[in-house]
Length: 141
Image 1 (spheres, rainbow, N blue to C red):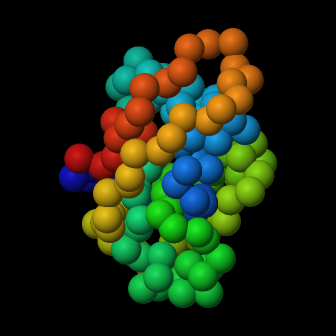
Image 2 (image 1 turned 135 degrees about the vertical axis):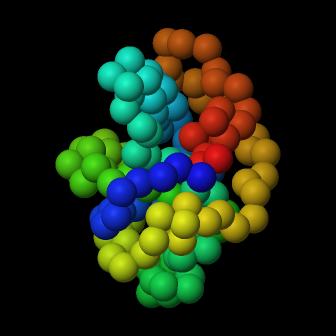
């Protein structure tokens, strides 16, 4: 589990997992996450963003927002509020939730694993399909 100095303010973008991982509108998401991870490695920074499948805090702490999200769901969480705001604008159809008062362990606690998704019929990107499960490398350890 990553260690962060307290206090950490986490912010999340939550949406249906298939929308995040498999929707043609979000084909660039995998590349954006990979580039951010590469930059952090090059700079010697500890990763401050993760994908959390079916986050346990959603229904437990934010039931009103949880009712708005089709399941299974996925949360992109980070302590970088500026980047999360950018990603919200980029992804568009996601809920932004400020995870006030949650510990890092609570924020990163995942629920059920995501199912395999069928590949979309329409391909709009110029690069090859991403392999199924590409998102798992961004799960917290």
